[in-house]
Length: 373
Image (cartoon, rainbow, N blue to C red):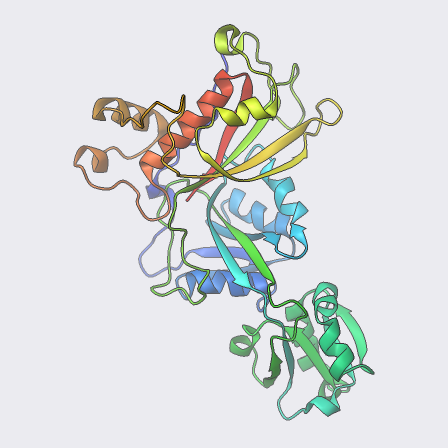
C-alpha cells in the first residue's frame, strides 16, 4: 500500500545549548540581502555563516553543520529562484531538512562610498550585475559617465571598495544598508536608488526539525520579518509514475485508492481541503518526458475536506495522541491541554497537513510534507 513520507523529528532536536547561539547558514558574504533578511528575522540570536551558493546553504543544514539556513525563494520582479526550487525536489527535503518559515524584505539599494567621497567624485560603480540593472535610471541621471564594474555580490562590491587604495576614493558600490553596520570607513550617499520602488524578495527558513522552536529576535527589525499570522505548509505533490526515478520521487502505485484513483493534477489538488497559496513546478528527473514535481504552498483556511455541507471536525484526544506518537510528536502538551509547539509549527496543523497528504495518496498521487510554519 502507498504511504505518506512523514518526518519524525521533535522539538528537542533543535540545538538550544544555554549561552551558545545556533549557527544559521545564508547566501553570503556578510552584507548581502540574504544576510539582511536573516538579521531582520533573527537579530543577535544566531551566529551567521556565509555560504557561496544556495546549494551550500542547504547542504550545511542537511549535514548538521548548521541547524538553520535561509535561502531566497522569489523576487517580485525577477520571479522564482530556480536553484531554490531544484533543492525543494531533493528527497531529503521533507525528511532531513524542512521549511520552517518565511521572511520578506523590501530591496532598497544604496549608493555607498568611502567616507568623505562626494557624488561628483564617483567615476566607477561596483555591484552585482542584477543590482546594477535595477538602478539604471539613477545611474543614467546622476552618474552617466561612470564605469560599471560587476562583482560576485553586492557585499563583495563594498569589500572591493575598501580594499582598492588606488581607485577606492573615486568609486561607489550599490549594496544593502546592512553594510553600514558591518563595515567601517563607509558612508551611504543615497538610499533607495532602485528603479522599482516595489522590489521585494521572499526567503525560506530551513531547519533540521519540523516542529522545533526557532530562535527569534524580541522585535524583528523589518515589518515583513514577523512570522505569518496564519498557519502555512509546503507540500511536494506529483502524479504517480509506473517506475522509480533516480531522484527517489516517483513510486509505483498499484491499487492505489482501492479502485477510486483520480487522474490529473487538478483532482489531486481538489482533495487537499486546504487553501492553495501558490503552485510551482519543476521537472521530475529520471521520469517520463515532461513529468513534473509540484511544490504547493497552502495555508489554514479552516476548510474541511469533503462536500460543502461537511463541517470541520476535531478528532478525539485518543486519536490525536495516537497519531502524534506515530508522527514523532510530543503528546505531553496535548494531554495536559497546553498548546503544542505553538510558535512556528503547530502540532495540530502538522496533523492536518499529514491528513491532506494522505488524501492525495488515496486519490492516486504522491505527496510529501516539506515544511510548516
